[in-house]
Amino acid sequence: MEAAAGGAEPAGGCAGAPEEPVVSLADVLAENEELEKEARAVLGGSDHERCSYSQGAVKRQALYACSTCTPPGEEPAGICLACSYECHGTHKLFELYTKRNFRCDCGNSKFKNLQCKLFPEKGKVNSGNKYNHNFYGLYCVCKRPYPDPEDEIPDEMIQCIVCEDWFHGRHLGAVPPESGDFHEMVCQACMNCCAFLWAYTSQLAVPTVTKVTSLEDERIVLNVKETEEQNREVKKESGGDLQGKIKEEEQVEQYNEPSTSSGSKCPETVTKNDEPVCKLQELQTKQSLKKDAATFWPSNWRSKLCTCKDCLKMYSELDVQFLIDECDTVLAYENKGTSDQETDRRDPLMDTLNSMNRVQQVELICEYNDLKTELTDYLRRFADEGTVVKREDIQQFFEEFQSRKRRRTNRMQYYCS
Image 1 (cartoon, helix red, strand yellow):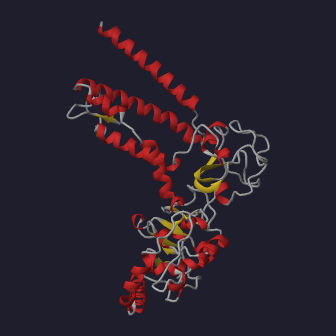
Image 2 (cartoon, one colour; image 1 turned 120 degrees about the vertical axis):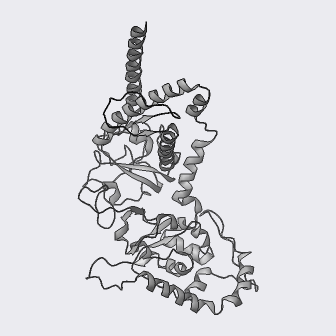
Image 3 (cartoon, rainbow, N blue to C red; image 1 turned 60 degrees about the vertical axis):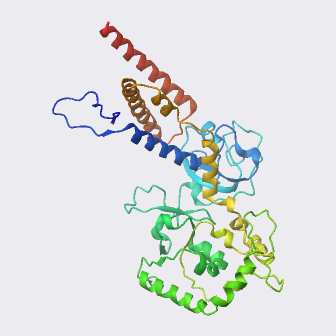
């Protein structure tokens, strides 16, 4: 790939040879910025130098599983970002994206022949950790790896916010809405465990189309038209007394500001008669359509869940207190990672370009292209082998790159003298 500033002609090229694609420096910088943004979101500000074990069960962090140390058949274990670099750099790792309330396992009793280099004094086990087949590199109800070399069907993976497993869109029992139309998903199994959520679907969930993938299924196939008709029926049934309740609900809402943290006290919902009211009980008196399917939810839907005393007790019994904690969401985690790393952040390349004349800009662009090409080829080897890039690897690359650059510069000076 070559980059040209303004109308400058790309250097090199033989007569009659096919033209290589030419992109602007702005395109190159925009592409790199997008990749950096994704990395910052995934890592969420995780510390890449210190093991997270000392923090206890971290609310949400980037996690990895080591297939080299804990292969299938062994007890599952998860390791933090720093340990994935320092203790498992040459091992085969499974990226788990993020998990909630997890404490780093690296070097504990599950690792028979490895001691954590960053925090050796660990307990034998972390009893509060939760594990699933993701820790063996398997996902979804089909329990297949991702990417799956045997799966030729293009499909996106969506994470359930309750069990935190990842699912193929076609294995959710419903056609997922467009990705921009929803922010979170609750899978079929978790909807069965958290059946109370069905009462909220008519008001909060993003409408979907129930999907059947086999004639052996005894479920009813609903197309878009049927789903819309059902939504109209629900609205019609609940619309009769809607006008009479608007003023009452407005008075209720001013007393019922929902908690956004699982550690906050639950404010009571107060009616005109100062009697506690449960949002869930009110919704359960209305008709709600239950399906054997996943559900999809918009942003901020958690803040609409009831936080009365009885509901808080129910969340605790079901072990889903995190549902009323807005800071638990992956979006909050990603925003934290982005804001932490972009504080007072400036683009040194753009600052340098603005201080150069046109010739210097073109020379810098050529150097940038050389660096990008060589670094991409260098890192591709690690990706192909499934190994983690360590600090020493990057240092070695730049030392060799600088050495090659000096040799090129010396040859140019010799011929130009």
